[in-house]
Length: 308
Length: 308
Image (tube, rainbow over all chains, first blue to last red; front, side):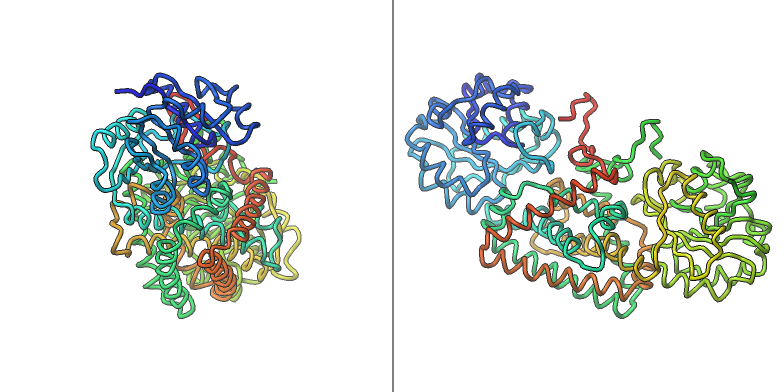
């Protein structure tokens, strides 16, 4: 199964990776890209992950069998309104947004009758942004979650599933509210925590930024990778998944208060038990193929090949 | 400059890495190791990072020019008491503990006259433990901080500095209290936060552990690496750097409350500004050579060599 024309709207890390992976997997007859930025369009045209870059939104989506929105989610509402009249009957409209409740809220009202709206969320990324950041293997072995609305066309859901499998991903279908809670836990709150601790380090008067940088290999540097993610994308995530983020953050705060108390009281047994329990999840992630087993993510491999 | 006999007490990740790096750098005439665990001693003897593994503490430190304690810091006090009588005059006693105030408190009273006590802390590690986890390049380009007591012998400080440089590290000298605060910020609180969020994910009823594992590539998995670190070592860190950890954690909590409020209020501008500011520290860390510039720490390199 492959789509005739694939339109990718938004040519950043995810949009460009979809292009690369779609070419590799031969899942579309023609791949057309569009980005609101003329500069991004020009750079993308040279990178070869589309067959062509359209100069207008209308040209990009016209006659497309599959249209994927890959901009920050804050742009979805006006995008959907702009393209609605140009979508062909029977087309599938999809996206890659990290929140799905707000996406359904913002896009659904504009979806024309006869067009299938099948939201999707590939659980993959890096801390880099822009069309140059994309690569074909980004989705390999990672999960893409579909959140089709109740009563969605089964063939359209199956088509989107096959599309993502063609890009190298594994596919799950999930309820919207559950998706937003799961991702608040596995992605949104971790990012919030990472942004926060890097901010704390930046603001702490007694420790200079130079010291933070020099001694970052002791743990801190891991957080800075996540906290280097695209600011616009993440602003939009937090503006659009408020309830789930606040719920998970509330739990995080309760747990941290307890942990703080254990430190204050010198409760070594409780600390030891928690620190032992948390190892198991790491093992599960490695067994599931969702991270490398190499020490330090393999980042410390030396040119002499000596790794451990 | 090289030491005649080097004794490494505690043959885990750091102790075994010191052995490997000392052999590589030829910084000691004889490298003798000891570990309280007979099993660890037997495994270490086969790994070749020492010239020999002693069967008693006394035999290990006897006639040593440099003795390095590399056990969890909770064991330092009794260790120092046990070896004191066997240290030769003029020997240097050092360590690798992640907290330095408590180390001075626990070791100093036992240091015999004529023995130089020069505490050290290599800012390097992985999430793996045990003698098999060590490797020669662990300290390459990383920093080691020395916290010599006031009036410490200058030649002894210079010798320890050269020792660590011989292992590939860069060396700084720092005041004890400042060390403990800097490390609370760059290492201890980040670990506490990582342990905490992995604990929250484990306990959250609405999200299964299987879901956390499957979708961990969206951010969560980074935290699980740190939260897989050695429980005994980290219990001892938090029991022994309580004040600095609670101080930095207090700041983290204040900042998180503010961030939580921004999410609740939908303050997109404030979120965007913070998320932009935090990118700069990441760039500083990469420029300083303290982390890789590869996306996702380079962990997503594929066997086909396609990386981006």
